[in-house]
Image (tube, rainbow over all chains, first blue to last red; front, side):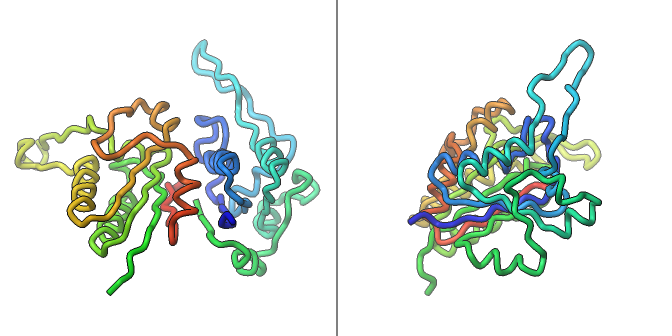
Length: 128
Length: 138
């Protein structure tokens, strides 16, 4: 039976323009494709990934327009479709003035006080 | 006596940007010295740690030539770790994320390291006693 993994993303928007995604959300997709049993926890600034309706203007340098901007909420939705649960720390969302109603359907809020209990459900916890 | 274990390290930092990479390599060194098998999955900037074309340089501020300066190169440290693993009779499997290698153009890596993919990390995690992630900063 595969080990159950929880991956934690805390560094929000780390090279997302350059990579066209969050590299750890991407890695979770790749690991899932390789058979890993995993869930994702958005912590700190990364909770903003779950907000719907984010649009990224195309990046332009001179005449060069960069196509395929990141779609962070879309990538989370696709991860959910692969039967991985995406949690977010509810206090981190509130501290940033974001209403839970703005968050993508299917994301699961978890209070800080319950994080230790959440971690105990997994064989390994990887904080990126 | 410590029982032989398999440890996986997932690294993200490029060389020469923070002390995290050096700390990671020191942990790998210690694991090898203690007779453990080690897997390393180098992700994003960490694929440059084993880039074979890293070059030492002189340092005019220090007033030293190339030879005198003996500038640290992570490729040399990794080669030394691979040699230490061979001598000790333990395994050091160093896999560089292939897509991360391509986007940085660092295909040439030191002998004993290899091109890999997240599938290697998935296997490493399953086969290891534990995994330590050493991520990059903001």
